[in-house]
Image 1 (cartoon, rainbow, N blue to C red):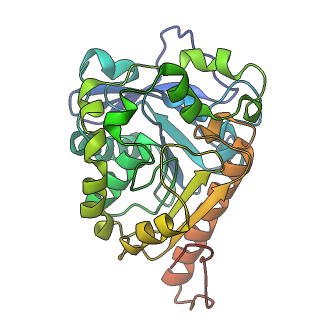
Image 2: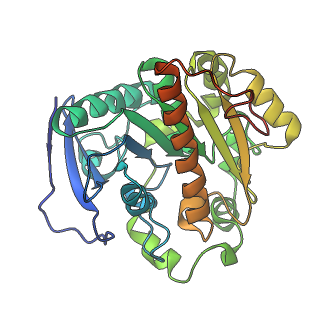
Length: 314
């Protein structure tokens, strides 16, 4: 269940310097992914990046501009960053062409964390950074997996801005606009570089889309780690006005920190846009605060009043 190795096969996908392909064997599946590690020191912690529907792990290593990559930025700041192709994407697509349900993917992701830790130094532990459908998977995994440190997710909420049945009737160009927003939000070459990242959404994954609001209500009280959610300025898939955010956060009754922020100058696919570096730095700053808070707690240091809260946080 825990054999990891570098993928030595030739890939048509381009990666940033310091980023290498990885294979991870988990519960009979071979997951592909990308790995970046600090070049000169052990990692402070390990960030596991989880992509959305119809994308691949390279979403977090954008190639249109050197500043886009979460993997290279995180490694420079002392984190190991592991971006995995979710079950049904990348190498595992041939094994499970119909994909897996959220619960099944959650079990695989938990196993992947164990498998990676068996072969690699992970530092203080695992931090999750997720996008869109990957945010659903990350929330599901947090609710079922003890010991994770924090979660930062973008492009995911609890109530859709468009009903799933209505989405099926959208013309292709309208769905494209909801995913990307205005073209000017992205550097030149983004869409050519993204061709290698796009993948079909597996059928079993697509079949669960309409179930998410009910699933969220069930798992939200069991999310018990610091949580930061980001909605892009041009986010069009989710309801995220103030009453919607208030309703969302009211359901997260166990999380010690719930922070909801907005990323200006960004569309749904934040990590491929011009705002990617800003968003990634904010996410990494949140992780730094979480690690420091955990150190203060273990040392018996009383947190300052209002520590790690703002906006929609509790």
